[in-house]
Length: 237
Image 1 (cartoon, rainbow, N blue to C red):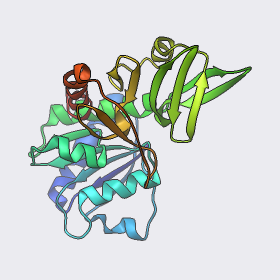
Image 2: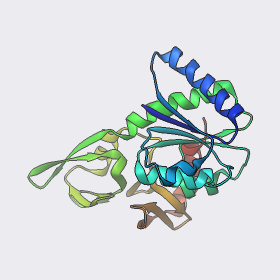
Image 3: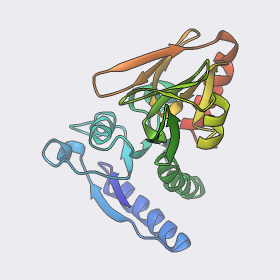
Image 4: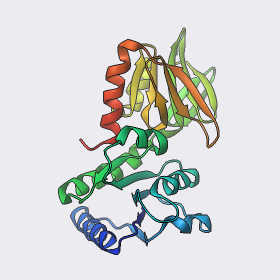
């Protein structure tokens, strides 16, 4: 897997590299590692990474801007943000990061979060086979924005459009088997948290493409639970 470490402090980069190497030895895997002291490289190098560990505050391109551009290149990337700020929800809605790591970095938490990022990357790339009319369609679960219960089946809204499938909503949920990623915003609607860019007590907004969003319904009864699930998704357990 390709791993990016971007921080304007060489001391922080060396610390993260040390922890990554501990992780590699513990799990007997090896990353293709790339380290950068600035995010400005992304303006001329369109490199694709599987996991990125990015500092928020950097001269030139900020960690937020860098994360946005990395997601444009590879929407499936898992981004871990290094930050001293507490405004997690605002940042999460803007750049949809996987985890936040507070400075100074806690060794055990870092190892645990990196383990979760590796697991999450493969889990979010899971493929789902659904029946539509007389044919079968293979959908990457990472491409699903939300699913809505309909008479006779389920409407699956993806980044590529809508699909009408024969499976019931509960069956789709069981097939995906990602309860920490796909959660109810309404009794009849299940939302993919990794696509959420905003929500309130009536509407959930999801990122369909770089310039396009879609909306679905939020039940006031589900709002509190949805918010809790969203925070659990973006923060360390």
